[in-house]
Structures are given as structure tokens and as C-alpha cells.
Amino acid sequence: MTACVSNHNGSLSFAGDHSYWFSELNGERMGYFKEVVPKMIQYRLVKLGWVGASLPMNLTFSVTNVCQSRCKTCSIWKLYNEHPEKRKEELSLGEIESVFKSMGHIYIFNVSGGEPFLRDDFSEIIKLACKYLTPGIIHIPTNAIAEKKTRHQLKDILSFLQINYPDVQLTVKPSLDHIEGKHDDIRGVPGNFTKVISLFRWLQEMKSDYPMLHAELGTVISNWNVEDIDEISTFVAGLGADSYRNEIAEQRSEMFNNDDLITPSPELYEEAIHSFVSNIRSEMKNKTMFQKITNAFRIVYYNLAIRIMGEKRQVIPCYAGISNAHMTPYGDIWACCTLGYSKSMGNVRNYDYNFLKLWKSPEAMRVRSEIEQGECHCPLANQTYSNILMDTPSLLRVIFEIFRPR
Ligand code: SF4
Image (cartoon, rainbow, N blue to C red; front, top):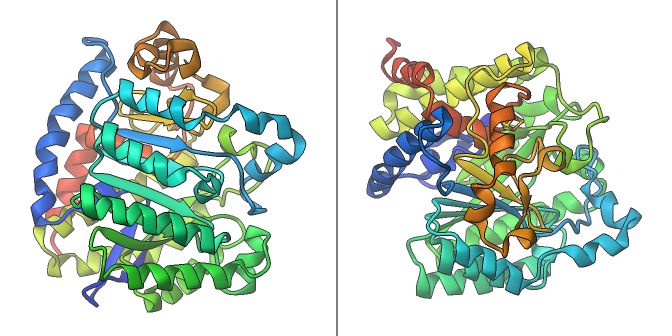
């Protein structure tokens, strides 16, 4: 789930998954660790039941379920075709502001969808997130199909950040699942590949005016491309992305794809990432200590993902619903998008838009307890990185990868 890419310094680097809270950190940003470590201790205590739940450090917000893609790996786009009335239930900007106001500082604001830029007020949502959640990192994926609208909203967001929050890092990640027509076939929209490349080039140009912008690319590894990951990552390397993130295609309640055979076998997945891991290891000795730490986390993640898929269990304890939260377009709060609708913690509309009231509710505690009992498992990257941080044996493996003889 990672790839060898050329970074903005022209050298080869490895990036992947949702490890951006490590991967994007440079020397100046090491200070964030001071913030992360106490949180990790606190989350361990929550897991042990010694203290009550506190704010997550990672909030994912699916801002809309509107989408023009017709992906083979996700059926969110079908929702409003079949139930157009449901769209009216999406949170208004005022409601979103009330929820954000009830929260406090989080570290990562992760946008999801649907296609986020199809919300006319999307840039206003980002401004509200900056004002109330004060995230260090904002991450936005896009299918790049509504290119003009996307550029327009991004210009608004970038100007706003430049003036008001120049230290916030904005990562924008067009999705690239294959090359040329094969991408269009997986995403179900002719001409999509051309738009992805066009938007990505534009993002690269914008970086000179907006240094907080990181132009990325991301691939969903599924049964339709798992055997071509080397080819795709070589192509991406030629584009010069700041980083390249991959996510394994999973059956998730959120995506209405629980009956779809989209996830590659653990064997095929292992084969696809084998060369990535070898490359990471072979390049390790030339890296700075910080890059070594980042890459070591990735290696541990890949091994865990393969084990979780093969053994079909939580290989290490999952902190979903403690360290990470997910809010749907309708205000439902989930521990994670894999459990999604099947185990909602509640809806903010029923808690006066008070996130913490919901987060500490008996229903939220029940969901946490079911996760604790190991009733579910998945290799969700965003969550697994948080889990590694809080699992001592995994952290020891990270240390081993940093210092292992090469
Ligand atoms: S193991 Fe996966 S499905 Fe279960 S709570 Fe964690 S992230 Fe969600």
C-alpha cells in the first residue's frame, strides 16, 4: 500500500496510506509529537476503562454522499439515484458549525465523501474546520471530475489558509486507480484519467504560490489493479507527486459494497507490496532519522495489514471510536467507516450538536466495548497507524526496523 515516488526534492521516497501525520512531518513539525504522545497515553487509559473518552485526534468527515464517479469498488454513488430524498438530510453549514463549535482541537481533519467538491459550500466547511478544530493537517481526496469547480473552491481554500492559517498543511489527493482507459474503466467515467492528470498538474503549479499545499496521488488497490501496482507506481514516479498513498479496497458499510468481491487476496496483496517493502528497506540507510521512523511505521503497517487480512481478526487492539472518529453527511458519528451504519454511536442532531455529549454516551461506550471484544477486524490504514502507536510490540517492531542491520 505504498509506492516509490519522486518527491519534491527530486529524490526517491516512499509514501503511502494515511500515514501523513508521520510522512509529512519534517524537522520543524517534530513538535507535533509533543502533542501526540500525551494523547496516546490518554487513549490507552480510555481503552482500559480507567478514564472517560476524550476528543479524538483524527476526525474524518464525509461532507456529502453526492458523487459522479461510478466506481467498481464503491456504491455510494447509487444512494441518491435510488433514494433522492435522502440528500435533503445532509447537514447544513449551520449544523456543521454547531458540531465543530462543540469540539476542540484535533490534529487531522480528514475529508471524505462522495465527492467533496460537489458541495457548493465545501470551502466554507474547511474554513469552519480551521476556526473551531484548528487541525495541523487537512486532507482532501477528489475524483477530479468536476475540475473547474474543484479548482475554484481550492483557490478559495488556499487563499484563506495563506492569510489566516499558513501553518496548516493541506494535502489534496486526486485518485488514480490505473493508467489511461483502465482508470476510466475502474472509475466508470470516460475521460476521468485525463482530468486527474490535468488537476494534478494544476496542483503542482499552485504549490509555488501556496507552500502549504501538498499535491498527492492515491490508488485504491482492488481486484482490478492489484497485479499492476508496479506499473502504476512507476507511472506515478514520473509525475513527481509529493507522496503517493494507497488504500486497499475493502468491504465497508459506508460504501454499500459488502457483497462485492473487490478486496484482493492477502497473497496477491502481499505480492503487490513486496517490492515496495524491499525498496523501503534497501533505501533506509540513506534516510534521515525521521524518514527512517516514517518508513519503519509503514513496513510494520504492511505486515499487519497482510496478517489482518489473512487471519481475519484484530491482530492488535483497535482504537477506533477512541483516537479516531467519523462523521457522516447526516451527522451520524461512527467509530470507523468499516463498521459504519451497522454500529453508529448516535446522531449529533439528537445530542444538540454536542459532539462530546454523544462521544461519551452509553451508545458510544457500547460500540467501543464491542470493538474491544474483537467482534470486527480490518486493515483500515488511517486507523491502523493510530493502533500501531498504541501497541507496544508494534512500536518495538518499528524500532527494530529502524535499526536492523542492512
Ligand atoms: S478493526 Fe476495523 S472494523 Fe473494527 S473498529 Fe477497527 S477499524 Fe473498525
